Length: 300
Image 1: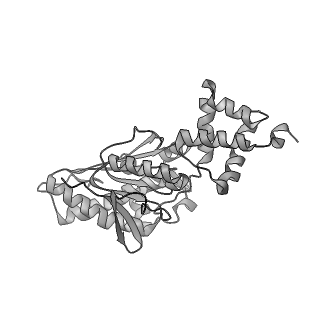
Image 2: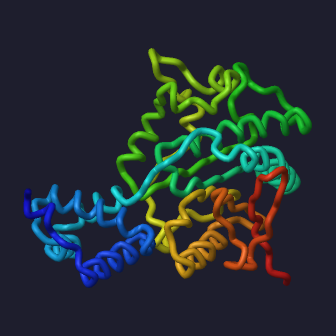
């Protein structure tokens, strides 16, 4: 048995490593999740051929340990995702949120839509959002046609509308997978035939997201712990991310999202997550089991 496998994680070492991870990305590992943290630390320590958790901690805080710290944080994110996850919420987004957003923008002659998928993992969420936005714009266009001819073939986003979707994650490897935009059959389970036909090209046993959909999305590295986050968003998706944070960090993150949203913008969080009791700066929007939170504007 190797020395790495017999290394014991002391309470003092655990507190040091918990504090470092919290400081770097805001993830909080309570007693319930400590075994998961221990397992991931042990794996990385073994790869670095170190014989104690304290020596691994010393590496992480050193100048030459930045790359290893990035690898550790990547190992601590679960990255579970799928197309059309939480369908009730996505129905609310496509019909209610987008309808409200497009009507308000049309009145102001502001034809730009900006969406941020924070914690996008392997890309299914931002690609789902792109498909739903394209459909919502098609419906809106039928009800509010513009007074000029649309070019043929019909573009995914009809003029004069412009759509920009920023997708970010703290994990470089999942961002690379997301940019490749190629998915196996089992990953396509929730994508119906109509969506497959319109938005994917089948290549062998895999489905590749069409070029015109990919062009709507820009992938980038972001750490939600930082203050430098994308601004002027109409909608932010941050689903199943806040559950990794303690209440203090959740409140800080919600405050950041408030500042990152345009007036009356929307925040969508995970099915098991809620803003209730954490802030009064958002109001809940609810329909058929789907929920979203709309930014509340301060009265003049």
